Image 1 (cartoon, rainbow, N blue to C red):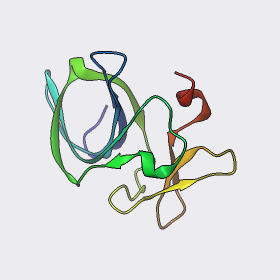
Image 2: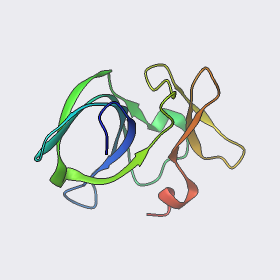
Image 3: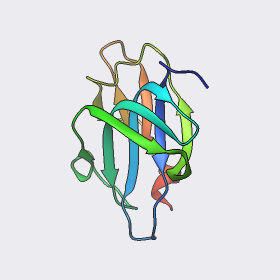
Length: 114
């Protein structure tokens, strides 16, 4: 893993009713106990039927302990996460698309089943 990469991070939920928490942004620094990331957050429940059901957080620097991270996806380093917009694709999955048409799946049909 390398600093300055763009990651999509899903955090661990403490209980089944918790919302899903996803962060997308640029890794600024990593230590043995945490990762610092300049990111936006995306919060949504277990079943999302439209884009309005997603709460988008402000762009800011966040520090996440490694033990709260469930999964990391490394994204294209050119992905403009700061300005990407939520859209619905042809499969009716919610994606983020930037000005260069680089896409990042936010919610897939598989995610909606769990």
